[in-house]
Length: 354
Ligand SMILES: *Cc1c(COP(=O)(O)O)cnc(C)c1O
Image (cartoon, rainbow, N blue to C red; front, side, top):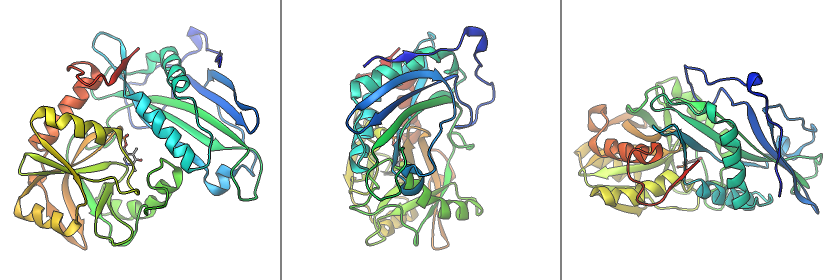
């Protein structure tokens, strides 16, 4: 499929601001393509960033038929740009699409589009340390249909912009509230899909506990309220005795993070053992208290590795590693970001350089 390119002239383009927050500033261009039942995908276009027009009866606005992805482009020291495992994001996009009864996007085409668009907007990929260019592909159900069934038309778009560290804490420990009331996702539901409803459902408690100083909510399984699932929109790891990394096994309600997968593959090359298993929150908290668990960290594209310094369940606080970033989190953070920015060897062939 051909891509129509309507690029701005050099003197019409903006530039990367010096102060970077997360997800508030967007680059000059965006990608869009439209799908109609019967015709398939068409009108692929890279054009100046613009608002989208929707019929008020568009299914995305009423029934939440939508999916998204999140990946980053990183500025290398030699001025080039790296993408990190982008094909994994496009595979997951299609898995989410299937779960939400939406059409698949050709994965090779998706990568091709991404490369072309990032090349056009590459002056927006910041070079300040710990900054990157956050990329947000999404698909929404369009058209006009209030009857409840899968939509007949869709819009797929990609936007992006320069970002600084995800948490204002940077690579410093965050405080986590363990929810004993709200649940994020249930097996058989849509927790495995990157779809808006999961995040809308998480806001209520997240907002509530933010007032008490908790940056993230740790979600337990929805059936027994006992097994650890995820922390915020990140996967979670527990480090036992400075040596063994344990993360909840993919249960059907956990989002399969690409950072999670990368940690599972990288950790053994750094001398750590890894395990995926069901983790009972009561055992985890007891092991934090006894000091058997030496570190806890969340991981995801946005924050990379985010040390957890404190967990709170039912009013009781459990401090991890004196509320400091530990050596295992630090070495994983250094190794992962080193590969992403091209300063460390990419043994697994994860980087796609532009
Ligand atoms: C995106 C996401 C993650 C992390 O996935 P990555 O591919 O590592 O960025 C984890 N949990 C949830 C709920 C997510 O939405």
